[in-house]
Length: 119
Image 1 (cartoon, helix red, strand yellow):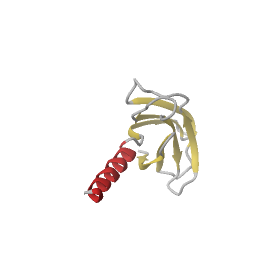
Image 2 (cartoon, rainbow, N blue to C red):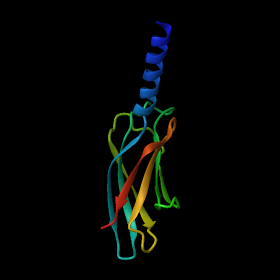
Image 3 (cartoon, rainbow, N blue to C red):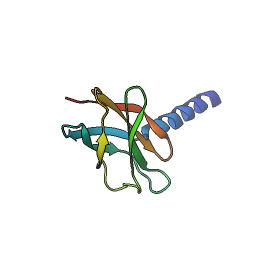
Image 4 (cartoon, rainbow, N blue to C red):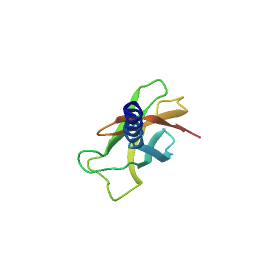
Protein backbone atom coordinates (compact mmCIF):
# COMPACT_ATOMS: atom_id res chain seq x y z
CA UNK A 1 0.00 0.00 0.00
CA UNK A 2 2.86 2.39 0.82
CA UNK A 3 4.45 1.84 -2.59
CA UNK A 4 1.13 2.56 -4.30
CA UNK A 5 0.69 5.82 -2.34
CA UNK A 6 4.28 6.85 -3.10
CA UNK A 7 3.71 6.29 -6.82
CA UNK A 8 0.45 8.24 -6.76
CA UNK A 9 2.15 11.09 -4.87
CA UNK A 10 5.04 11.13 -7.35
CA UNK A 11 2.65 11.25 -10.31
CA UNK A 12 0.69 14.08 -8.71
CA UNK A 13 3.82 16.16 -8.01
CA UNK A 14 5.20 15.50 -11.52
CA UNK A 15 1.95 16.42 -13.27
CA UNK A 16 1.63 19.61 -11.22
CA UNK A 17 5.19 20.61 -12.02
CA UNK A 18 4.67 20.40 -15.78
CA UNK A 19 1.10 21.69 -15.66
CA UNK A 20 2.37 25.06 -14.40
CA UNK A 21 4.86 25.69 -17.20
CA UNK A 22 4.24 28.78 -19.28
CA UNK A 23 2.76 28.12 -22.72
CA UNK A 24 2.97 30.22 -25.88
CA UNK A 25 -0.52 30.19 -27.39
CA UNK A 26 -0.07 32.66 -30.27
CA UNK A 27 2.57 34.71 -32.07
CA UNK A 28 1.97 37.55 -34.51
CA UNK A 29 4.87 39.18 -36.34
CA UNK A 30 5.11 42.18 -38.64
CA UNK A 31 8.35 43.09 -40.41
CA UNK A 32 9.52 45.91 -42.63
CA UNK A 33 11.53 45.42 -45.84
CA UNK A 34 14.80 45.35 -43.86
CA UNK A 35 13.42 42.46 -41.75
CA UNK A 36 13.20 44.53 -38.58
CA UNK A 37 10.22 43.02 -36.83
CA UNK A 38 7.69 43.50 -34.08
CA UNK A 39 6.67 40.33 -32.22
CA UNK A 40 3.42 40.04 -30.26
CA UNK A 41 3.50 36.89 -28.17
CA UNK A 42 0.51 35.57 -26.22
CA UNK A 43 1.32 33.52 -23.12
CA UNK A 44 -0.81 31.43 -20.80
CA UNK A 45 0.45 30.63 -17.32
CA UNK A 46 -1.08 29.99 -13.94
CA UNK A 47 0.65 32.99 -12.35
CA UNK A 48 0.48 32.75 -8.55
CA UNK A 49 1.96 36.12 -7.69
CA UNK A 50 5.48 37.49 -7.30
CA UNK A 51 6.97 34.09 -6.35
CA UNK A 52 5.72 32.25 -9.45
CA UNK A 53 4.94 34.00 -12.73
CA UNK A 54 5.80 34.05 -16.43
CA UNK A 55 8.75 36.44 -16.45
CA UNK A 56 10.09 36.50 -20.03
CA UNK A 57 10.07 35.18 -23.57
CA UNK A 58 13.02 35.03 -25.91
CA UNK A 59 13.69 34.75 -29.63
CA UNK A 60 16.44 32.49 -31.02
CA UNK A 61 17.71 31.41 -34.41
CA UNK A 62 17.19 27.68 -35.14
CA UNK A 63 20.87 27.09 -34.32
CA UNK A 64 20.47 28.69 -30.88
CA UNK A 65 21.76 32.26 -31.36
CA UNK A 66 19.90 34.64 -29.03
CA UNK A 67 18.20 37.51 -30.90
CA UNK A 68 16.00 39.25 -28.32
CA UNK A 69 14.37 39.07 -24.88
CA UNK A 70 11.05 40.48 -23.71
CA UNK A 71 11.17 40.72 -19.92
CA UNK A 72 7.87 40.61 -18.06
CA UNK A 73 8.26 42.68 -14.92
CA UNK A 74 5.22 41.58 -12.94
CA UNK A 75 2.72 38.71 -12.57
CA UNK A 76 -0.48 38.59 -14.63
CA UNK A 77 -2.65 36.70 -12.14
CA UNK A 78 -5.99 38.07 -13.37
CA UNK A 79 -5.03 38.56 -17.03
CA UNK A 80 -4.78 35.18 -18.77
CA UNK A 81 -3.83 34.64 -21.46
CA UNK A 82 -1.95 37.89 -22.07
CA UNK A 83 -0.04 39.39 -24.99
CA UNK A 84 3.11 41.48 -24.86
CA UNK A 85 5.07 42.94 -27.74
CA UNK A 86 8.69 43.54 -28.59
CA UNK A 87 9.73 45.77 -31.47
CA UNK A 88 12.94 46.48 -33.37
CA UNK A 89 14.01 42.82 -33.57
CA UNK A 90 16.51 42.49 -36.44
CA UNK A 91 16.19 39.14 -38.22
CA UNK A 92 19.41 38.03 -39.99
CA UNK A 93 19.29 37.78 -43.79
CA UNK A 94 18.32 34.37 -45.11
CA UNK A 95 16.64 33.28 -41.87
CA UNK A 96 13.17 31.89 -42.59
CA UNK A 97 12.16 30.91 -39.05
CA UNK A 98 12.86 31.64 -35.39
CA UNK A 99 12.31 29.76 -32.16
CA UNK A 100 10.49 31.45 -29.30
CA UNK A 101 10.96 30.17 -25.75
CA UNK A 102 8.88 31.14 -22.73
CA UNK A 103 10.19 31.21 -19.16
CA UNK A 104 8.68 31.35 -15.69
CA UNK A 105 10.27 32.17 -12.36
CA UNK A 106 9.90 28.63 -10.91
CA UNK A 107 10.21 26.12 -13.76
CA UNK A 108 12.59 28.07 -16.01
CA UNK A 109 12.16 27.53 -19.73
CA UNK A 110 9.11 25.63 -20.92
CA UNK A 111 9.89 22.38 -22.70
CA UNK A 112 7.70 23.57 -25.59
CA UNK A 113 9.33 25.83 -28.18
CA UNK A 114 7.20 27.85 -30.61
CA UNK A 115 8.60 27.86 -34.14
CA UNK A 116 7.59 30.92 -36.17
CA UNK A 117 8.07 30.66 -39.96
CA UNK A 118 8.34 33.89 -41.93
CA UNK A 119 6.20 34.16 -45.05
